[in-house]
Length: 339
Image 1 (cartoon, rainbow, N blue to C red):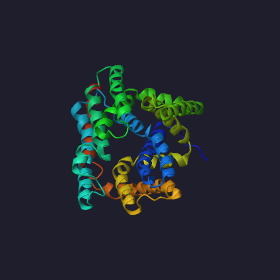
Image 2 (cartoon, rainbow, N blue to C red; image 1 turned 90 degrees about the horizontal axis):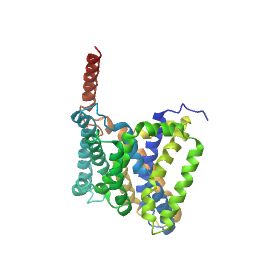
Image 3 (cartoon, rainbow, N blue to C red; image 1 turned 90 degrees about the vertical axis):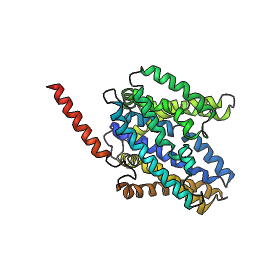
Image 4 (tube, rainbow, N blue to C red; image 1 turned 60 degrees about the horizontal axis):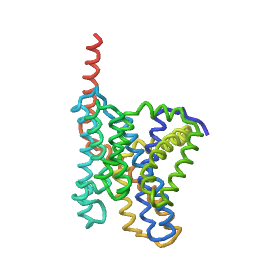
């Protein structure tokens, strides 16, 4: 295999791809509930990927969408936050219409979407993180992360799965802030990491994960702390596997289409559940989640390639033009100051 030049973009895209694929697989694992053995296996797999998939996604989001004191609150809100709110509104309408048309079999009710009880919660959740980060941009990083960690850990222990958007927004704020505030440290850590780093983190993750599953007294606490190990493990692993061109290309392709995958994959899983149900066979139960994941990814890519070109479906109309004008104004201001 031919090695690719390992750059920050490569491992970040690979990490984003790992995260979104894990999200799809986590949701698709529910299709294995018809067979006890398959369900047990997928439950363990789901616990493993859930320990890093959302913390990783919010951390990576913080790396590149975190605020700067050099950008005004209003400009940051228009350029970063408003597009998320727009896409959330558009797909809330799509989900609500599908819910009404299919008698609540596909999509999601308006009440669930607005209460952040559907997969779309991620979009307003990320928007809230951005606004909080910009409001606290002059507050010391240690204070921000300390308070966010204090808020996060109880939520992670007591509402790890069923809290939906209201709980998850609080739970994952610390990871978004970490990505935003520790951007340089994280990049340097990943760039310096060696295969031995990955092995060490993997062993620690196995130990902590085993405690979380087998020791009920401290299980919730151990599982709540597990992302502290699994997130850097996936980041370092993404860097190592991203050295190969094939992996880097796949990671870049999927990593640049995460929004389409996020909003489309629940619909595909719901359709598969309607058509196939929950098969009782072990083999079918073991394979169906993977097959559904691949179908969901393929459908998402089709949506990205078609509807994604229509302004307003996956992007906010006019945002590209606004960003271009904003960059032009910023350049003129910097030039004027230099003079």
